[in-house]
Amino acid sequence: MSDLENKLKEVEQELALSKEHLEKMMIEQQDAARLLIRRDLALSRANEKLQALDVAKSEFISIAAHQLRTPLSAIKWILHMISNNEFRDDAEKVQFVEKAVQSTDRMIALVNDLLEVDHIQSGKDQFVFTTVDVVAVVNSVVSEIQSLVEKRGVKLNLNLSPEIHISGDVNKLRAVFQNLIENAIKYTQPGGTVTVSSLLEKETAKFVVTDSGIGIPDNQKPHIFTKFFRAANALRVDTVGSGLGLFIAREIVLRHGGKIWFESEVGKGTSFFVELPIAPVQK
Ligand code: ADP
Image (cartoon, rainbow, N blue to C red):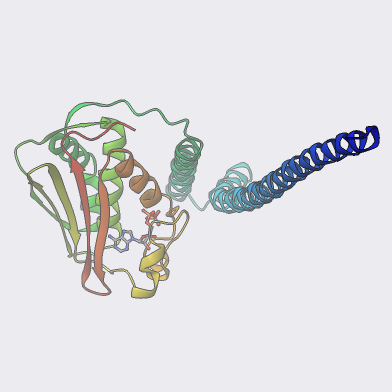
């Protein structure tokens, strides 16, 4: 082979190597471009999520502020009356001061619910799991709300097992049953009945709170566990609820590995069911 031919061969080999190198670089660049597009998509999605969260947070604050404004205004108005001594007599004064106390209680309950929702949503809420007799929890809730039962003129029937021990957080479980039983009483007309029953099934403790009350309209059923949601017929019966109780109750039941659902018919009544595993997985 002549020198020239050798040189040409060398150049050819170098060119082949460069081509291979270039092809490799192109593939690498295409991979990098694909990765960038994927990252860009992921960032856009995260951004959309953050924007949605921001909107949800603003809505939460706005509804909470509106709900706090009503009792606060009532208190301000009553304080104003006291300072101007605008009452007919002492009896009327006492009546209005009691109203101010009720408004304060309402605000405290609302603030507690708001804090609970915030804790649940931010994952700050610490659950303390111990062995709990859930029937005893229900019984203690029932004895604490006797005055509400009497005030509403509702008949409360209990059909509870002697005891059912599960692994759970006693205070959180108390909040669940307090909400369900108080709702049943609140949304039942005087003379109606509320029945609380329990049943020990194979691996679960099942509780049913049944009332003969106003019921839940079919078109509002999908929203019942949504934060701040209150059905129109409930608003007419009870003007002071926050619409946070069932949201909180559901979160608590889920954290116990349980289930919560309801059946309801307008004008006939509602049953709320809670199923709790005897030994739930701790989350
Ligand atoms: P609140 O009772 O403060 O409004 P909840 O979150 O406890 O809030 O309940 C949300 C809504 O679910 C109520 O406003 C009402 O419309 C409906 N609800 C709950 N329990 C009952 C019940 N036992 N009977 C009829 N409606 C109910």
